[in-house]
Image (cartoon, rainbow, N blue to C red; front, side):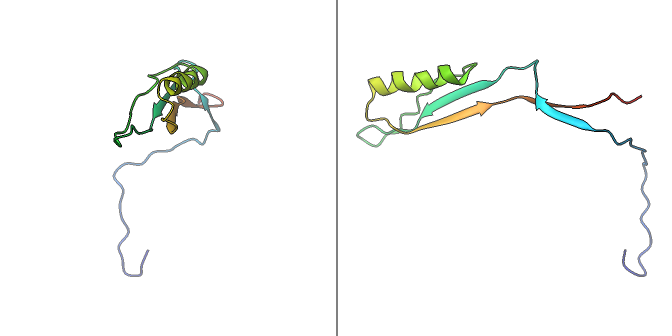
Length: 94
């Protein structure tokens, strides 16, 4: 605080208890995996086809080979994976 500056008052005060927390996968929600084609047709049009939301990465990756079999010139893909996470205290406060 600078000299001559009056102290600030805070309207709400709370006492918080420090807890140890863990961070990890949320067992109640599913992962989602998606692979999208970023290849271009001969006229320069982007493909934008995708695997759709899949519950596992292997299924999404298999779609790439099916798509590549139909469109061998499409060789560029992007992959998105959603992994739901959760934080919980190691011990619940009492």
